[in-house]
Image 1 (cartoon, rainbow over the protein chains, first blue to last red):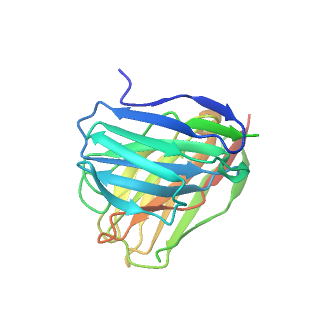
Image 2 (image 1 turned 90 degrees about the horizontal axis):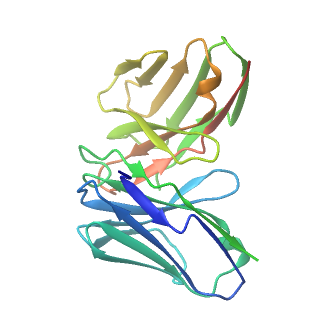
Length: 116
Length: 111
């Protein structure tokens, strides 16, 4: 059983297109996250949701719009893709919010986005 | 905002040598976590340290949390080729509900 799953695993698209990445967790966690990992491996938080409520929006361009239809799902939609959006996007989940007890994060396998 | 610095950025060792990566936070942390990411993989949680001065061991890995809860280290004794990967520390300050990752240390091991 995959704890945190993401689709697609790879995404190659042209500049200006709109794309979505889906994430699902079957761990029963309350909190989900989106991270961006650039070519230098730097992991940067983008968004976090707790019980479907947006908690963190880390100065991400508004071309990025997360949506959490329920606690187990957190999707990421990106409009008007730019070259600089090329990166690996990781979804993660934790039992509780970061900074609290039980906040260890479980990461999905990642989605490698390449914008041409 | 909270910053977490990690050094070194890269470390290459011969198999059997020891390895240490260090992490420093600009602010006092409520806890610090360590993750390992194998090449082509995703970060995997290793451990969480919560108490001032805490030391935890996992087989050949020793984790420390500083007395002031602003720094931490991960030490691997007698590295093996299976230890290859990027090791990240990640700290949370509590009230901002955010885990801030260090830039990671890429460990390569020569067999």
